[in-house]
Amino acid sequence: MQLDNVVDWIEKNAIGATMLNLSTSIFNIKIGKTPPRGETHWFNTNDSLKWASIKDMRNSDLYIFNTSETIDKKAIKRFNFDSMGSTSSIGTAINLKIVKRIPFIIPKRSAMNSFNSLLKPYFQNIKNLQTQNQHLKEARDILLPRLMTGMIDVEKLELEL
Image (cartoon, rainbow, N blue to C red):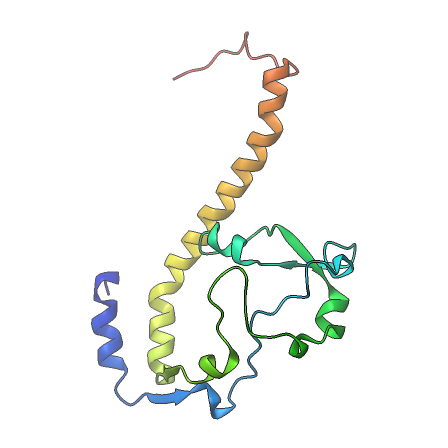
């Protein structure tokens, strides 16, 4: 099946699917609340996890490999996220009530498996290319300063083009 036909495929296979709202308690949803930035002990500690910020999402491709900050593992367990409001200084906020009202379709398992088989190679290729790009950036960042300072001499290099 060609990727161009995905919309047709979804319409055809959505027959027999179930329409649900998130409020049906199938999921335990937590949405983007962050400890206050002034409480620096929650961020960038030795015992930290990568924390994808809105800035990271805005500047990323499909997969986020590196984040601009980390959050302490203790913050995930101990910080009272429910004590925070649902506003944001970065952008328009969305609260849990709104998220729970968003309807979605759960397709038949056979349709999900077929769809997954169709798209999996594309996503794997995207991930592989992004990983290669990350490795190339790292190599550039190591080699360029060495080339600029003369630490690596390329004058006598013989290149075949």
